[in-house]
Length: 81
Image (cartoon, rainbow, N blue to C red; front, side):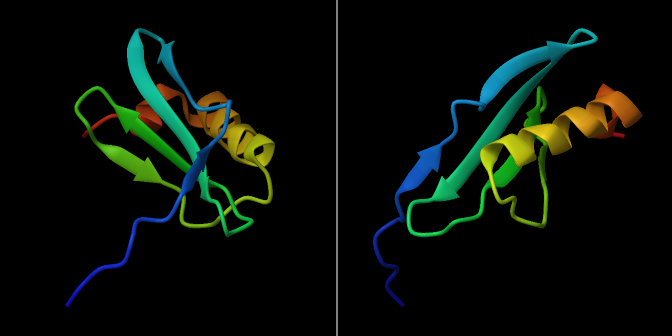
C-alpha cells in the first residue's frame, strides 16, 4: 500500500509554548489546507498528546476551548497520571 503526499498543514499564530503553574505545554492549532476545521493538540513535557476529537470553526475557537479547560481544570488536565 502506498501513501500519498502529506497534506499541507496551516499552523495558527495561536500555536505556542506556554508554562502554566510551572508546567511546560506545547499548544498546536492547525488545519489541513483543503479543510475548514481547526485541530487542537496539547503536548506535555513527557510528550503525552491530548487532541480534541471535534474540529473547531476557527483557530480562535480552538484557543478558547484550551483556555476554558485551563480555567476550569487547570494544568492537571494535561498531566500524566
